[in-house]
Amino acid sequence: MHQLGAADEPYCECGEPESVENFLLQCENYTRERKTLFTNLYNGLGIRPTDVTKRLLLTTTTNTDDPGHGTANR
Image (tube, rainbow, N blue to C red; front, side, top):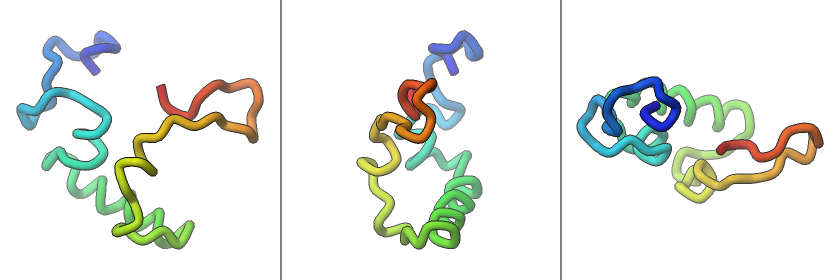
């Protein structure tokens, strides 16, 4: 959020440096949301939480279904 100008400090509310990895995998403030994410991945795609890794969540990929849009996460 700091990089987007939406926060004054480059730290998460949990005190860790703000990062996608912290937000998706570590921050205690988002435990409930993370559980929902893992549940939806399992129920919708059959991906088990133990199969969800940093590589899967944090990899930048090209969206081949929509050629007008660059990468999935920037």
